Length: 35
Image 1: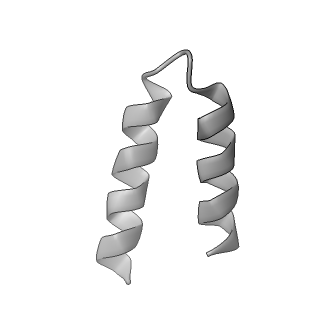
Image 2 (image 1 turned 90 degrees about the vertical axis):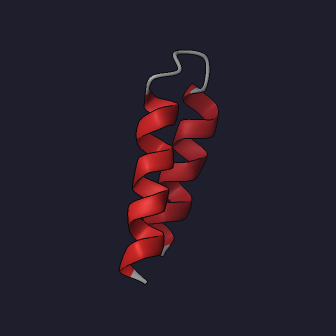
Image 3 (image 1 turned 60 degrees about the horizontal axis):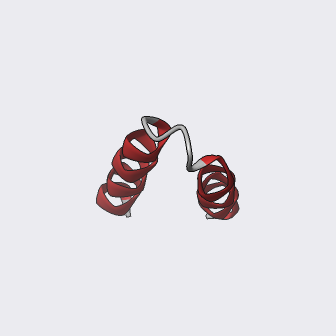
């Protein structure tokens, strides 16, 4: 489980570098928060 969370965090960090992925960033954050 921890490994999956690390991968999700890394993916979110990579998306944070994208300025045009605000909506996707929020959706991913909400999905991670639910888990």
